Length: 537
Image 1 (cartoon, rainbow, N blue to C red):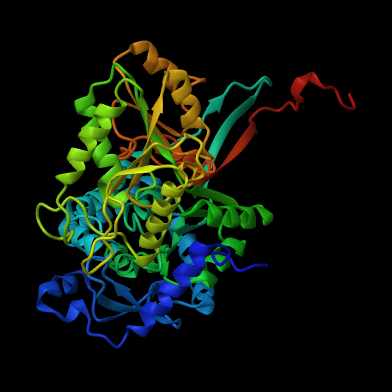
Image 2 (tube, helix red, strand yellow):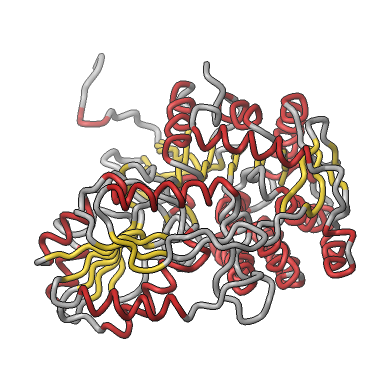
């Protein structure tokens, strides 16, 4: 079987990036500089272990985490290998025997303590996300806050998730549903949200009675280590096995092991659609459960009655925020022909006023791409857009400064079905399309392969209900008069079609982390059969 995560160009670039990291391992580390000494308050050092299963270790390759804002090494992490992974699985399964016997409200109390421990270091963790991933500090802090919010949600859930008691057609019988934990949940997260996505999964999974093994993104290993150290402290304070929240940082071999491992009852994967397709089919081959959060080619529709002030403010954040590296980033603006030119002109002005710089600095709203891979994809999309007839209204260039900075870009003049428009490019590029009607706009919104997030701006109540109805948006997130990005934790997060169909975070997403049993209990002395069947009487 082809090794999982090697089958796409993205994975090959990641491997190349890791090799580049290793070549730089002899360079001085940012963590050794006084400016970044705060990293030590998160338990980090110049050399860190990337495997935790109650004890810290790692027998894999040593990689160097790079800072995207200046291209300098931050610190080293020793990854795990397949033997580390197998050892961790055994320890996690042993830990489940303990954790599953803890009553759900007591599990919720432990998750509450995790949220409290995160609160105490929210600013430090947010700064680490900013340093290692590249998003601005307010977004980094907000991401950690999202984990904290999900912990709060999970605490309430620990006293609320329940089955149902159903009417039985047979006298002396009770019919009910019982929900039980799956056991071992594997979580593979991506670089763009190295904290929040793990928080969505682990908080709910733990409350439901599962244990977790986390494989963080190869390029944000320090975030994974710092978060796990906080989890370790909470578990130890409660005399619980550390392997309840295990970590195995690693390369493609760890991803393959998780996908093929029958001990992993549910594998949650966040990443690109091509890699997610391989992960999903591999897990399905062993009849395992999989939760996929994949790509998004998200659109904002702007009708002729929209509040354009709200449109410009919303589109600016949705297109430029996180340097276009959110799965919910707006990549298409479908603008009614009567407002197209005005919206583009106002957005160009707004783009020109966005402060770019070190994401840790106050006042900066736009930071770097995460890696050279992102810069390369940006350049290719710009070239292809021009070749296919597009006009670059603003941006379109790599910024000449240390780090991986590119200009946020608006492209007009392309047909709605141009290849580059239908391609998800994980970069700050938005394609402004001119439409004649709401019906046409909805059709264009739905014609791409992905189905994650969508939004419409209108003041017409009839348009609103058409948009959220059966002939409206086919996405998992359907917004009105707000951006495509910035989802709240109370609703289920996820999308349709090539986005994968998974749901995480709020609503009834907890059901993905449990198994349902239909139980019929005969408390009488007779043995009637269902449907009135008589057998041998």
